[in-house]
Length: 298
Length: 272
Image (cartoon, rainbow over all chains, first blue to last red; front, side):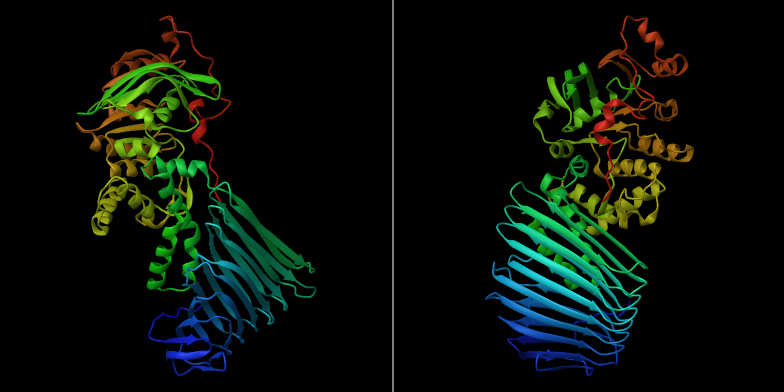
């Protein structure tokens, strides 16, 4: 894991494929929808996307160390396709957030590929008020590649959110870990499918996943579906899926200390979703995340 | 001075009546010990005062300075000054002690506590209870030993400054040193604005704390009231002599479960 100190000195604002503002380090360039990261000093970059329908390619060359925060605003709804490729020994920590709360229909497609010994830690803040379909697919193509995916999801009011996270092992000694945590409220729907695929011959690989959804109200719908497709003996794999109400004994305990039921629920939810922000080390992000979480108790 | 008054309290779990008319008045400044064989209603009484949803009050009243406690939600009772130190405190993964304690303190304040003031208060309490300094950053009771959980209950009591503290077997699971620390800490908190009800099976806690009032609860009723001398008597003779007073015992259910019947509602721990 890279111990890059994040600063916001470097940023790029891309509006419908046009750069409208940027301050890039010398080893980062943007050309025809591709952000290229070359070897050099560790990179911390804030990417701001304003778009309707767009494609972007994050191209992390061999040995690059980078910490990325991507903030998206999609005021009209639409589709965002991303290609995220990590070269050999590239270490990337990436946090994604949606900053427009407008009940638009949004579609996200991530296609990731990780070369030898590449490490991708990626976090998704999925708390925004939108209708979302997210398909996140990561291919571990090089030996020793590792992908760690963490999601914090909130679906409320009459929103529908569906996510599919797929980590595909296409080399030996690869590791895929996903932790998908969600909260569903009111009359909303939330579905998360976690898929781990290890094909024959890719021994020494590990596929682990946890999918959990807390259900707040009677009328909401939640489903957490883990799938492991494994065609190789010498691997480790595990999955856990849980959909359920908040533990009544936990709530009671907090209430005996003076917290209202809503406050207690919010505190528990915060602890449940908060780990996603530790994908990157950034205080501003923590503040934004806290603010976004306030609506859980609303 | 505040008064917690329990009158003719009847409490059931499901269709089983556990308390059958309890009368008890506690003033701030007093420390009451509640004795009795297992399964006779001690923990039930404390849980019912706090408002555990599994216990339904079928008759009688509980008032705090003439306010109807039974009409209050659990959290309201807490904010009005009732505190229950639990026999089996919950572990809550993901919630740090620090966030939890701050939220609990702020729940009873108009203005949120200043961070500096909070840290000072917390550090002092941690120091006094000889707890680990990393407590603030650990998840609430998660991975805590039995003794640490109990100390954490007393720490919460310290920070929340209740009018009435109900301590349910707060000494079980404590080693000799921890028991000393906890009882010293409780003694330090004693003052004219705090009343306590303590349930314990061991006379050592009572020896250290010296209750002002002692009651024996048998089969859902308080059958004997007295002072500290009662504790000695029970310690030497058990509860058999109470029978001679014409009291019928409820069949003891000990050995079946290592806890008193009344506490089972709060027992389940479910991590993850």
